[in-house]
Image 1 (tube, helix red, strand yellow):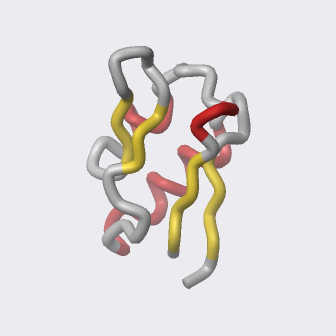
Image 2: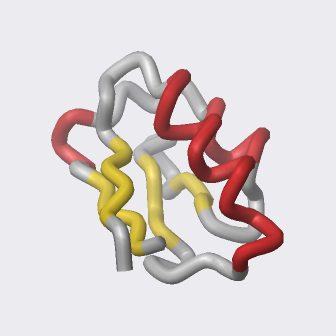
Length: 64
């Protein structure tokens, strides 16, 4: 799995950080920052959930 984020679309809700803190973080303005674009398989479920609940649909998952 590869993760992509569209930072301009992000609305800083922070749900992704709560669900997958090893993959996502937020900058000082609350905008998503990607810590790794190829998360460990142990985090895949949390990353999928993050993408599913993102209110701005700013997270995209790509099969690797």
